Image: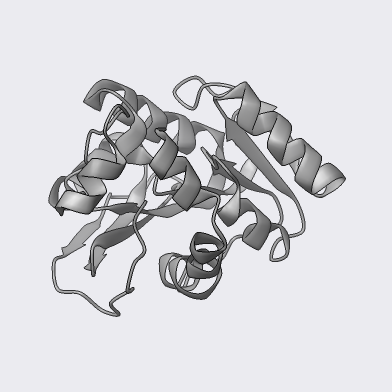
Length: 210
């Protein structure tokens, strides 16, 4: 993450955007359950908001310095684990929900993105939900903020099929403003996979991509 991107992600403006726009839109209609995993929280704006909403929250973060910051700020409210989301250090069927906000585009290859999706499916309980948001990666400002960073945008029109290939079902993707939201479920038993790609925006978050 370059300096400008880091300043924005650590800002009060981004924390307010997460609390008022990103999470309400990204989690609309999502039942999180009692044991939630967030992947790639970075500076923790989403984590701080989530910690007040769920009984138990774990986060998986690759960068050790971000892990230390999160542990210092959140203490025992959140279990912070340093690790790679493409090889999660958790057992099968552990979590009621797995969440990923504005982070899929930071994985450097499509293969690693798909491994993350498969790992999210693996660590979910039957009936659990994988949900989140990501940016459409459009606009000059967004690209300038990612100069020197990994940037591999996820095509929302392809994500449903990728979620199904990861072993999930009821996959839904919908655009809104400069972002898209997604959700899919771990099948409670063997069931036919279903998907719905919806290109027409619902609500339009004003600035919900990072």
